[in-house]
Length: 236
Length: 324
Image 1 (cartoon, rainbow over the protein chains, first blue to last red):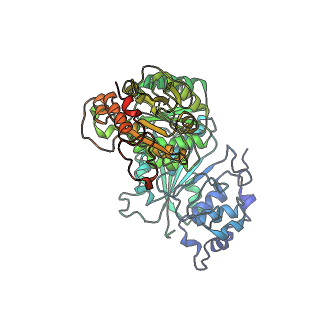
Image 2: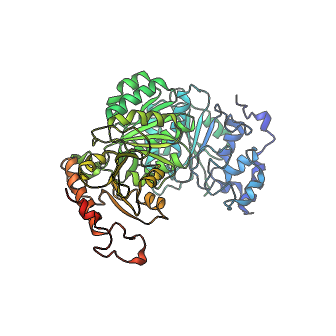
Image 3: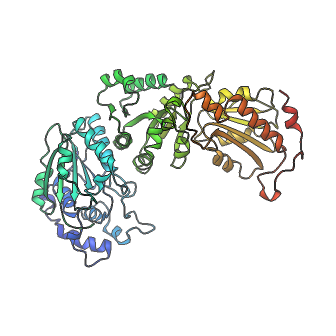
């Protein structure tokens, strides 16, 4: 039984709490939260959407969050630490020889981290497998959220997963694409169209507007996987 | 062997709710019945091998036991990084079952060959590798693999031996004298090894499981000095590292035979390729007798400071054994 991270429980934990942790993690005083393209989306997921319990990170009925775009996981680590998945002191030795936290996350080292990532284009396929595995075991409640980058979408493996997730009717799967315009050749016609033409529902939102992000994340429909394209500035 | 794979996997899907099959079109028509009975646990993702392995990793992360299957070159060579990251690095298990082997698809050409599959898996962590030499060995190996949680590769081939040897580890097929060289045949390679060594004083040992290699079994068979001839149905020398490690403190000689590191750009039959790579009985005999004759049995060629072995030094036994 998953204890949902309800607003009442976590109102005290504001995104402002994450900022000092980010600074602690990077040692960079000048990095404002806006420098992190994924921060708002990950915060909204962990603060408002995901039904997860940091004290039970392996609960089979938990929602899954997969950081496919493993680059720049600072925002991810800071949010996980804020939510209590691991001691804040872990943030002080990023990528050190004894640190469980590296520049790409490792699921075998960090509680709450669902996949080890870093090489682009692996998370969505794994997410399809996790969503299928949960369905096979008749766990219909947990949702699987996979966070990708617009540059990451260049990897062809994503398009294998996009096509099949729709065919399989994986309506517990949500892809969140952080669009900070890093794809070298862009996505003419828009990123959302790549999902919609395959049979997904999709929404494109301002990735810094928490309410819009939450609303888009909750806009999934029965029978179809869902994509949220979160447009942001930021380089990490 | 593919028939045994299909029948056994279909049975496993019926019996064990933990098993799930992920295909990428290859052999999908053979699993029509299984897919009809278990639509949730049989997934043909289409011609999408990266997804096939990614899905397997995801299934394993939810506690299931995925079986994935395609041509060897499409389920190892093409998706090497998925095997490395979606399985190994996630600490996720799967049973990867291939057909096609090194050149079973000889008429399709090199695009369908995978002589390097086992060598590629050797760069990864903790894989069990089965290379059955007979259809009868396939069901027990598959069933045991399905009951585990590790990463297992099962390399099926249309090449086969006359008799199944389902035992574990290195199995002695023919015992030579105490000092006889040991010929290790992996999987279907045994078929040509047996006629190749006819009349030569060697011990022939067989295994369908080159990883983990039964190094204790090998050590127990070796005479002094230790002479090993490896015959593998995939890239020549794939197991040389394992043998060298196992015998690091023992003076030994090793001849490693297998598929050559060359794209022949030729079609023909699998038998043609076996011959071209010197893995037919005549070719193996040529290599074996040459190896045993040109260097004395008591040479210590593994000590570089000794230099090249002097012709004629030491025992003449190899010449005598070459009679037939």
